[in-house]
Image (cartoon, rainbow, N blue to C red; front, side, top):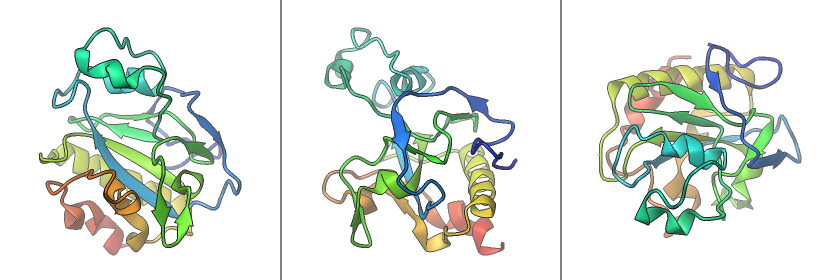
Length: 183
């Protein structure tokens, strides 16, 4: 797996999202933000996360979706419980994943970060397949974007404290980052 010249991962499903815009510095990627999400909350494999990121979610299909009406959100990548990965936004563009955020005194983290969503809940654990795929993804983006460092891979809770808590206590940071420590 590698990042192509047009900033997509090779051998990964592409499902382009309109929920993105240009970065002020397209190659100034300095941060990776790990998130988790399920739709409906706590349910795996519905496909609704994919539909949310491409503005095709039927908000009448579940009562918990009322707050998602007219929401425009995306991530660069989504890794499901089986490790299957979908890319929505090329890395040289700004995906709308972080919301109001700040890292090391810089606000607006969307502009200089890559957002990776894992299918999961803040109170749960993630699968072996997800960790394997996340390791491969991180290795590929670290090779392509030299401004990234291991200490610049953070959870959503670190850039939006008090507002977000994902990926949560069940996320094994040492496991996720172990492949980067040997590079």
